[in-house]
Length: 232
Image (cartoon, rainbow, N blue to C red; front, top):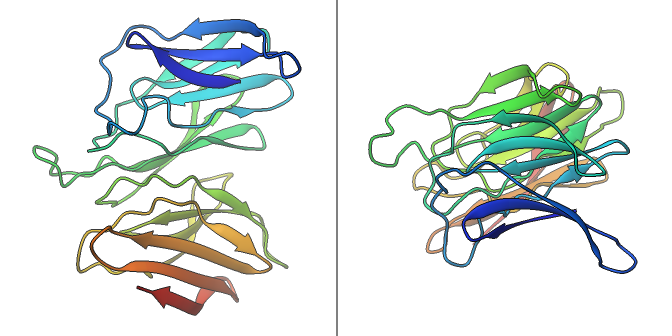
């Protein structure tokens, strides 16, 4: 399953993985396309698939759900994030939910208030299960990851310049802990996704001409503590 764009139309494709033959393709309704960097694409987010359905996110449109044969099951049109370079954070699956980070650049002209949020929708219907507002000041390009520490329930880990590294309850969207570990004195972006190494959660953030950070944290009680960092 792939996504792409043809003549200003956003498209989802299914190919036979043995032969490469195109099995089906589906176009979204015509929409005004978001602004993207010349080296990027309007179809940068990666789809997520389970045994029954395919879930696709386009920043210019929103979420769409197909069965494996290409039948559109539901669609959830969403506001286009305000961004200089285009959307790239991908949806992820957790239980019966699809979760998506909708951070935006609220420091752009005419965007005084942050519309940033984490969104969860029901896999079966596309109806919103919960929304968690964010105070993000820069668009996040990274995709969240699941994390399971010993003696704790599973969490979802998010990186963002403003919020740092955040753990949420994926069932409810409640923020369980948040470590503001990046430099807030000058604008940065979280681009690469966090990773897990043993019990460590490692997140990155930075900016081209300024500091770059790699920060490792680990569980301490119900919270997390910083273990080490690399800055350049």
